[in-house]
Structures are given as C-alpha cells and as structure tokens.
Image 1 (cartoon, rainbow, N blue to C red):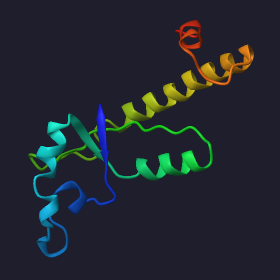
Image 2 (cartoon, helix red, strand yellow; image 1 turned 30 degrees about the horizontal axis):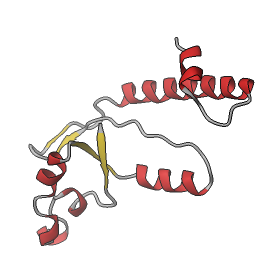
Image 3 (cartoon, rainbow, N blue to C red; image 1 turned 90 degrees about the horizontal axis):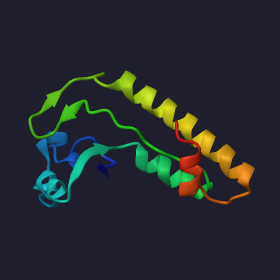
Image 4 (cartoon, rainbow, N blue to C red; image 1 turned 120 degrees about the vertical axis):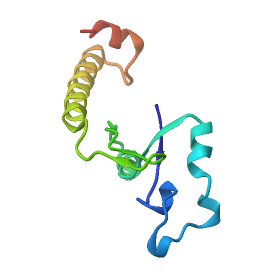
Length: 119
C-alpha cells in the first residue's frame, strides 16, 4: 500500500509535539492522507531511498504495523519477525532476478525475467 514518509515522530504524524504544539497546517493530516489511500507512516525509509538514488543502489522497505494513529493503540514488536522474513525473501528473489538479468545480458529486469524465475 501507499506509505507517507515523515521526518517527525510527533508533529509529522499529526500528534502534538513539545508542549502539545501542533501547527495548523498539520491538523487534519491523517484524514487527508486517508483520502489518498495512504495506509501507514514510515520515518527512516525516505533517507534510505534518497541515499540509494544518489549512489545508484537498489533500496526497499518492509513495514510492520505497531501503532494506530487514529485509536492511539500501540503494540511494540508486533509483526517484526514476519517483516524480517519478508525482507529476507525479497532479497533472495531480487538476487535471482539479478542473476538471470546478468545471464541474459540485460540492463533491466523484465517481465520475462520475473516469469522465468518464478518459484
């Protein structure tokens, strides 16, 4: 699903920050993002994507839901083992695609490459 990347754990996710401060332009952020079908917030991924782009590397993110901003529910650690398994499997799949791409002398991964390495 769609992810919103925020550089802030509080104000950037429509939660009051220091001394309960929430700037007017942040009010209604959750509703606005929901109207755009955004499912979650992620803070660290934006830096990873920018750096990978600068250095010409591949990057990705797998998210676990540990908090519900609407209900203020927080469940630390939920889903973390599953996200690690998904990320590890993704790395294996991408490695297979890269090997097949190199074997064929292609610059980019194509649908044919993906189909030929299906598990």
